[in-house]
Length: 229
Length: 67
Image 1: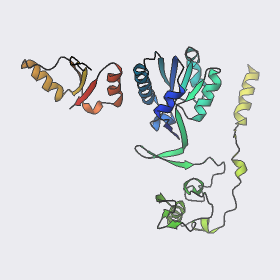
Image 2 (image 1 turned 30 degrees about the horizontal axis):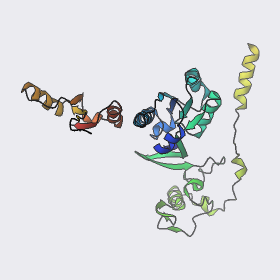
Image 3 (image 1 turned 90 degrees about the vertical axis):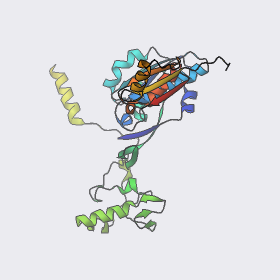
């Protein structure tokens, strides 16, 4: 999932200043799971803002809504008309969601309520960790399901480096050395050959930016269907 | 704040203990301050930050959780 964290309240308060009708929109997928921008967080922020406004004697109408996803048009469409009644929209989605909302609600100003952090997993309740850099050329098959690009701070492909000490990384004694993890798991799997072989440099051209993906078969089927109609 | 200041207090009470205690106090004709409003919960484990914030948003000066 995409992991994000809510911006500090003071920053949010500052960014919504001057708007008399504000709509806060939550996202019910990734950021909901990481407790940053779901229905509950929308309610909490709305309450906080209402109290802050009351204390300052400001009359601001704050609306709240949470949709399933802000990165898909079909989930945004039902709220477009309603959102047009507001002076500004504060989105609690990741950066992708904020941008699609801004496109679809143009010219209403869109304000981000979160800082998007990374693609990661839930390590335990309330703890998330990065696992994927979306490099566009997955090597997890060679490295026992442990990504050296993401989990090694140096992103090296032929590790470990000299900073690996007792299974920990020199950058942080609490951080596991990704290469020590890879070595341990590959030896359990009897596949140490995978790291003895020198890995060629990764082709970072696959990490196209801004990346785009098109499913040609799907588009072709859609076009054929439209032609029949 | 003047001397006649009466804070509005909201108490979130568990049905099985604190609320029952308040109920018993009532049947014993014991009085407690009228500026305390009690909200019964099936369990105080249900209390959420949101409940407390909403109480303040709606004008409470203090809130307590008893359970």
